[in-house]
Amino acid sequence: MLLKEFSTYSNFKYGSIDSTSGALLTRNEVEEKYKWNLTDIYTNDEAWETDFLYVKENLSKYSLYEGKLSQSLELLKECLLLDESIGIKLERLYLYSMLAKDSDLKVEKYLKFDSRIKSLYSDTLTESAFIKPELLELSDINIKILLNDERFTHYQHYFDDILRTKKFTLSKKEERLLALGSELNSFPHDVFSIFSDSDIKFPSIENEVGESVEISHGRFYAALYSNDRNYRERASTAFYKPFRDFSNTFNILFNSNLKSNIFIAKARGFESALHSSLHKNNIPISVYQNLISSVEENLKPMHRWAELKRKLMNLEKLKPFDAYASIFENKSEQKYSYDEGVKLVFDSLNIMGEDYLSVLKTAFENRWIDVYETQSKRSGAYSSGTTFGVHPYVLLNWTDLLNDVFTLAHEMGHNMHSFFTGKNQPYIYSNYSIFLAEVASTFNELLLHEHLIKKSDSKEEKLSLMEKYLNNITTTFYRQTMFAEFEKIVYEQTEKGNALSSNDLCKIYKELYSKYWGSAMFVTEDEEYAWARIPHFYYNFYVFQYATGFAASETLIAKVKNEGVSAINDYLGFLKAGNSDYSINILKKAGVDMNSASPIFATANKMNEILNEMEILINN
Image (cartoon, rainbow, N blue to C red; front, side, top):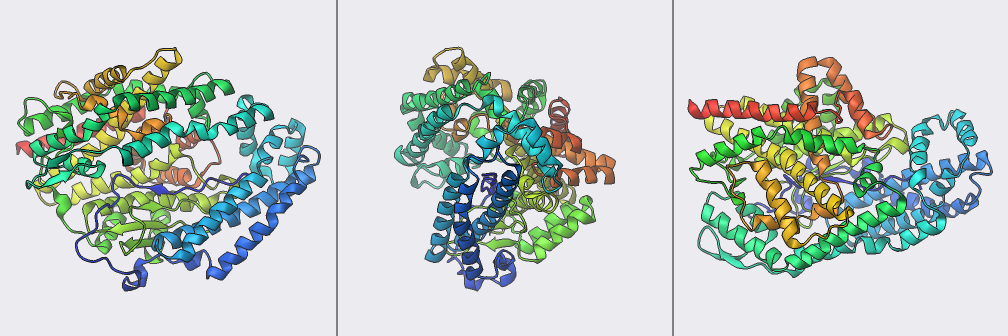
């Protein structure tokens, strides 16, 4: 089936975790204007049932075309149109059930809706599984004739992409064997997730106020921002203890994941696991290599920030648990109502022009956003992504914190991307790759950062906001590149036949951590085991996209500021492009070449600019 994967764009950096004090509101107690309007998808549940029945009854039609797509162009066209009509309805069904369920996770009716649509989606994939393999068997002449039909001219890029994968597609028998083993391929990640999140037990420690608390993932991350250094150290030591104690177990899981991905890459004929991973979105390996080498040339701003932080904290050396502790007064304690947050986000994007702002205004005024935390509502935040023919939605859990304002900016970046893509692309291109997904959301975040710094009216507030910006660059740009380099090294070593012990992984990680943070940082033995706790290392060359997305966003903002209307139009073109071209080309048309060092240097220069402003403020 040509159906796009169901996806939401979640915000893990700023998503709310803890609710405010007091009993949570029920959904009925929230004003309608702060709840999303699902009648834009279906007028009622009965309309949902009608479309559900339509899809279910039409699945049998796929069998009319199986084994015949290369025999008759008319049958091929009919099959593609059927597949598209089913896909459009299936996505709308999924969107409605997901949003209704997430509004209140205790409503049994919508839990069943969600289960039913996922089952129907699985059935659809099974019934339509023959389409892609049969498309690969089409002759060039038949494809050319098909594309001359005005109903299918827009399929040109789709067929280009399909044929690009032909070289790495195996025989039906071999593909079946790989499919039979697919569940085993996820085994290392599944075991890691259960072991790390559920089975291992963390020690109890004394918190900041002298209470005994059992450390956890959440408490560890919260402790890293504490102003009590002794507490940060206690939390770090306790958190890493099970990862050190079970380092051999984590090592086996880690290496099993590497070998699984290497096996699949070799089986399909790829040069390496990296080549296999990047091939899906046609990202050149040179983009990955350029990121790592260009960041290595631009580590001085990172070292400069570490040294400044060390001096301001009056420490002989920073340690990893000091990396994110706030130096300046924490302005995130200031309260922001949702309406105030909306104004801040809108004002920060004022530079983007009427076409952009009018859609943003429509979203804020027409209930595209579900704002407040209520009883049994899904936690966190997400944008629903593109659903063809329907505007995107945003889920929030607003708690009046500055982080909520950044969450709103972030998710509205995704929403604008999804809206413009859905409005301007046919169904088969009405989505966008992960490589592009974080560009629009980060773009909005960074403009909000700059707006807040510019409008802040006190030295302390400016310094706090600058520190937040620097931490964003550190975690999203430098740290993710460090992770990407770690992945590259361990895969290359394994592909050469070298066995990597727990000590080997610790040594590689320590050397990289020291390189990225510089001489101001002392790497503790605990931090050497960070490789054992990071789930993204099981996602196979995923994290580099956070860094490239950040660099692309910084470059696009600079273009908008320097070039005005023409750059804004280029950016809108990027938002409208969806999957109509390869990701690297879409960015290039917008003015960002991720094969060049320029976006990386621009991001490093931005960090230097903020550090310059910060040092001037500190010294005045």
